[in-house]
Amino acid sequence: MITGASRGFGRIWTEAFLKRGDKVIATARNAGTLSELIEKYGDAILPLQLDVNNRAECFDAVNKAKAHFGQIDVLINNAGYGLFGTVEETSEQQARDQFETNVFGLLWMTQAILPVMRQQERGHIIQLSSLLGVIASPVVGLYTASKWAVEGLSESLAAEVKHFGIQVTILEPNGFATDWAGASAIHTGSLAEYGQLKTAVFEEFGKISFGKPEATAGALLQLVDEPEPPLRLFLGKVALPATQQVYAQRMETWEHWKETAANAHGE
Image 1 (cartoon, rainbow, N blue to C red):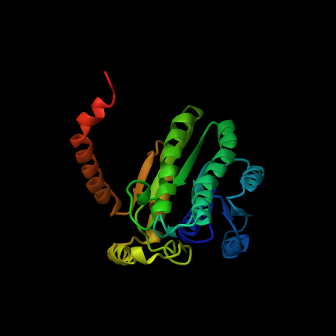
Image 2: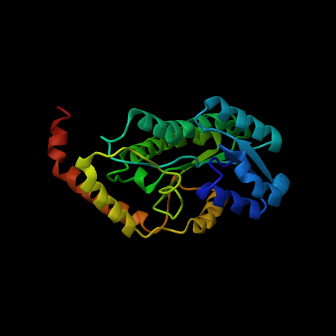
Image 3: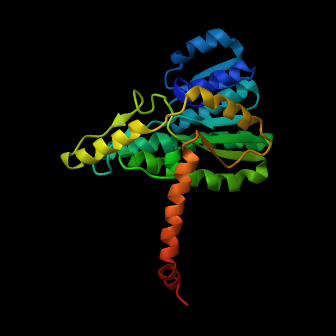
């Protein structure tokens, strides 16, 4: 079961699973966007219209999928979008909408699938995070915050459901040439005070080596076939070295302030 299957990673992964003979429940805000896949793969795909922001719809979609195929082995919580703008520029509604989809939509789908997987005594929940769920960047603060929330939620979830036979993996892609930063993106308003910073940040974004989205399909196929999947998995070759650099800086800071931290514990 894949949310956000109409475009980007969701579309690529949906077709990859269908090509190798798997059955896929593909959800999208507009199920009509899946018509080509329905024509090509017939009964192997169950298209469902779903707004993950609606908790009741999430539970209804899972119930329909379970009734149709009899089981749901894997849930890929892929639905989400990027919000670009500084923290100060972000409106209340933009901030709430970002968390509504990226965090609460993922939460509702997770809650909906858990009874099914507990009953099956097996299952694999794959949560789409980001390299920005591990390290932060200016101008995408609210998106970054939403992915850090996904990281914490999912790591706790993994510990809670392991004894049910349910496995959890957090996917952390670096930048890929999807429309995440294009048609799918939302931009805040602009304050002149941040103009120079935003120009510099976007110039740096332009220098990044973006991965090919289609190349991720093999990793997903391998991941769902793995008997002992990892809790976390980077996608792309930029993520690991970037994280190593940032975590080295964090460790240096924590070490420098360790005496102050220990004193704050008290006797």
